[in-house]
Length: 168
Image (cartoon, rainbow, N blue to C red; front, side, top):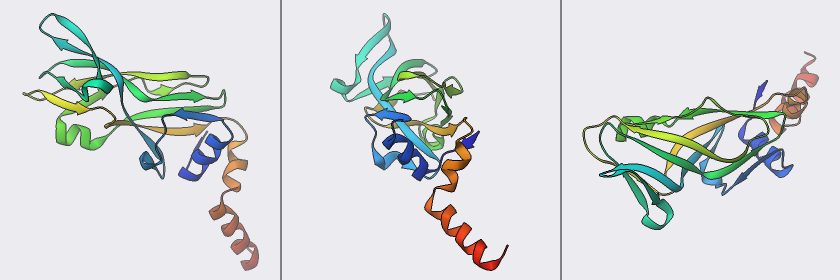
């Protein structure tokens, strides 16, 4: 298993090994992609859970000590040889007192948006904007080809040339 760097994520996307609909390069970082709050959510209301068109409304309000069901803005398609580990966005917890609840992975072969939950640990309503970053995905190649992909990066090629000149 091999963690994909930013360059490899882009290469895998170009080859359609990993596809991310509604991808935004602004949210791609050296070892992960930050995914965002999507178009539909269910939030607790006076009469139980209420469906919100987040794209139209622009945000959701999560009452204190409540859980909202949300989806990611991004639609992920994973090949049979890739998976992603999901993680929380640290500032989401620290600044908003919100905890993203999710399964641990995007499995090989996955082809849809992520279904997630957000728990408001605070004592007041928490506002989450449409398209706001809510979590991160760290992509892995789980095939035997991962090492070959790593050897193809510019940095790896340069290090190999330098090592060859130095006789290591």
